[in-house]
Image (cartoon, one colour):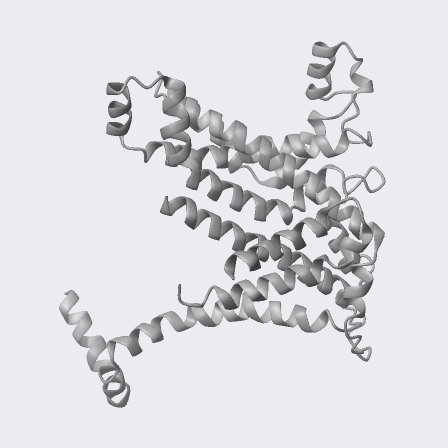
Length: 47
Length: 315
């Protein structure tokens, strides 16, 4: 789960700074926020 | 003398208070001592963060404090995430962060590796290399402005000497293509010593016996570098990249002093846009939303990075 959250953050981060499509930039924040919240929650789970 | 002073203090303490303090457990006493720090942290870090989150949903303007504050919901976020100018500012920031980190890491690690050779006078050169980092960004920004001056600047004359281009044509701060690189050069000059220092700590922490064992196994210098030096210094390099990455995403002072975001908006990084929206257009709610977007980006990246760092350390 932690790896999925990390991947979502990374994708959101790339979407925020990419120079190709405004639509990707528009949805970057929500992607990053979802990934970060997910990361905070799942990183508390016992391994 | 000291005993008498302590005795006097003990006698002067009002009896009810003395009894109360005597009754506190060790844990309670620890909380009593750290509570001022926690309160300060809450007041200057946590409260402003939550206040900024609240403001990001409103139309609040700091220059009109008496105006009725309206709740706009997600309108500020929608506007920012659909604004082409801010999208371009994000790309400028990414360009700036990528190149500064790349250059600082490569040069910083190389310098650390050379300094670690412990040649004659290495302590002196370490001190000299560290000087830029100790200067104030305001001072660095101002004197690099002079160095970049096309008429009198030393930088223009050096470039002219090497390339043959007339110094008046080397307009680092007013040329659209050169201005971003002018800032990258200054930031690299100033902060490479910081990366070098962290890398040097990493290199010095590698035990000598590992190299001795490698020598016994007849490993070449190249092999020793790739199999011992680089993997063992990697957590330190990653830490330096994390610190510089977070700092450079918020980079403001150097850009503001050197170009102010110009020429046009070619060096307008996110923090400059944020400052313009917050203190020139006075759109406090809007700029708070922008600040929250940047915060989430840096916070998310830092999370990934710390996870990667822990993995490298476990290896």
